Image (cartoon, rainbow, N blue to C red):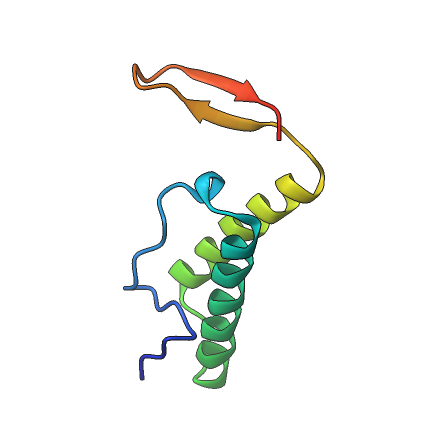
Length: 83
């Protein structure tokens, strides 16, 4: 069963979590947690859901700790930027 309040493994995730607002990252986290809960109710969670949740948690932790983010320039080079 699909739900607008869950992110199934087949639902695309935003490619760049850093570009989302704090509120949007929290919404993604909430929807992934609801998906994880539903998967646990059916047995074991999907590997894809676990990986996605880890990525979102890492982004939330990065923001909470004020760590710099990695920015990709249009030429493919990388630079760390604050906040």
